[in-house]
Image 1 (cartoon, helix red, strand yellow):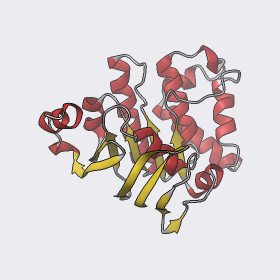
Image 2: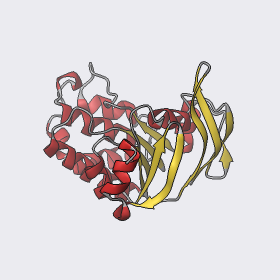
Image 3: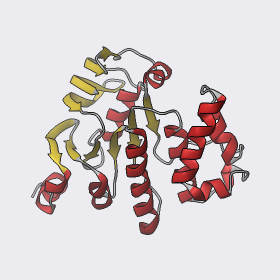
Length: 234
């Protein structure tokens, strides 16, 4: 699905990602964890095309997309959930979904919209409400729906629980797992609530100082000892 080969990049002259090589297999959820400043969000931005590699390659479905702009990567099937959830605040919920699925044939759009509404019944009830008036949880649901209605095969999700209460976080995680199962997507997720993230993930990558330091550990085997070592050096 996705292969990063000796990937390095950063901002201006500061290197943030240093010689990262990983592979993602189809239909899995990968949790990317690490302390603040480890380079997790930067790695997602590089895969999505908002930053270009300084060295190394990004191979997606056997194609070198290292120099593809974001829109071209989106056409190839890469979806990106921005931290905080990006929506059009002045449009209604329904209009946000319509904008996100504009390239679909009408019949396909209606089918995909109903899928999203089935997963997120709360936003179906408020489809005519202006998106800027949504609660934090409703905003996340809408933003996720806007990403998945495009039927991506690879979805990059950056901290979906940011700013949400514990009960809502659990619902969001369960929804992400359901979206993955319905759309058969591969997901690479950065999540600050590690305990909830582990519950829905298949594998874990640990990151520190721009490097992957622990590769593809089964989520069920990730314990508190590993977390303490990663975050506190114990």
